[in-house]
Length: 345
Image 1 (cartoon, helix red, strand yellow):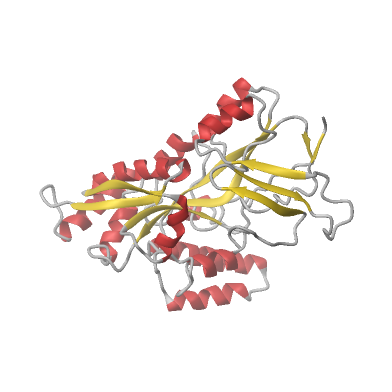
Image 2 (cartoon, helix red, strand yellow; image 1 turned 135 degrees about the horizontal axis):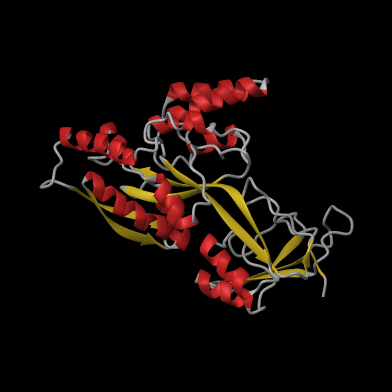
């Protein structure tokens, strides 16, 4: 399956050269008559994101990889290729903190709470997205998200208030009670996937944790090893990005927070909250369900289940001759069947 994948989509697998390219060709047996329009797609693998953007502006590529263009790179593209079409979208993906609850001293709920209180979420958003990112809980924030907590409610969640110094002062008191001080600090490695969207926030995280007497060292992990590493909980602290396939509480809660879920990388388990997952899932009244979802999301953030740092906004760019492309606001995975895309050249 890794080298000869089989599917029923508009394109069929043709070729894969590691670190070079992936090529797919039109599926003549696709169920939708007349689709796809394209004869094939070639994905060129360019490890360095800036290099890929330069190649795009030079006209080598028809489009960028979906949602890979950061806000600073978007400015560069518009300056160098003013005719390029670019759309900035929420991605239903969050940057978050993973803490291994089984490894001392992080088996202490108080220490994990101190870490969460140390986060200056606005700084992440300002530095990495020039203010375009969004601060929220587990669910995609409104207006793109249907289930995210309203801003007024979010600000009442511990650690989400605007007074960062107050939050960090409370974190400092917790650390003192746990016996950590200027002469006794916590040394850790902060694991993260070795790509910019992980590395960049990990560097900021390490800097912020110093405020609560935690000294971190960046530990970059190659992509091929990353998911296996966090799945087996082979980390102490990690900076993670979580992408969601759809804006729905069932997908988010059961996949990332339910007891025993394979994607529940931090090992968080609250049987009573699992019952609340079931309760909201069967609630037919959408307004009632929203309130249940907000209560669950609030509890997840209070428990530090997987502290959400921010939700990103990323751009996709394409040349004017690319037609029929629709970008989504609720997932990096949806809308890329490319069955309606055609080239006007």
